[in-house]
Image (cartoon, rainbow, N blue to C red):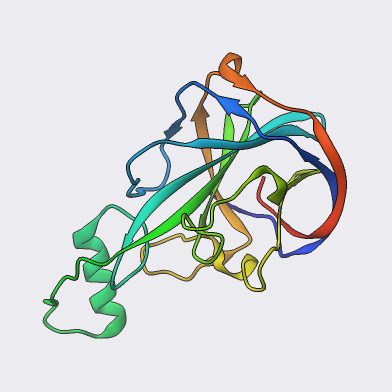
Length: 196
């Protein structure tokens, strides 16, 4: 299921400190993402609209020529060939692996998460941290780099258009007792996009 929060806006809220999570994060019936090694890392957790939210980051792999982080290589290739009108659908693979990030914002009490794929910056080479997120009437990602908001979201199909400002709504299995949240560090007003 894909939900859309809209574009960037001026928002006010609190920046919470870093979090610690020692449990497992399991996405139930999520999109077929090609997860890279490692697991989810909790970068921020706090209160928004009377609920506890945790923000997790994880790296995914995306291969040329589609640059999408989806598992089904055969389906991905066929979609690419159809879109680019390549007949027959045979082309050389490259070993180029593009690293992307995903942001998973979890409503801890409800066990629901919002998963966004980041196609622009920050990337795994320039990682996210707690100061990028504002907790207000929802959870927001600060627009740090021009175009960041325009390069993150969800897709309804492989090789489909990027739905900017949208996320996959997924069920999450989480161990709330293994989550340690910090406290609000300071208030902030910034241009940001809602991610949860």
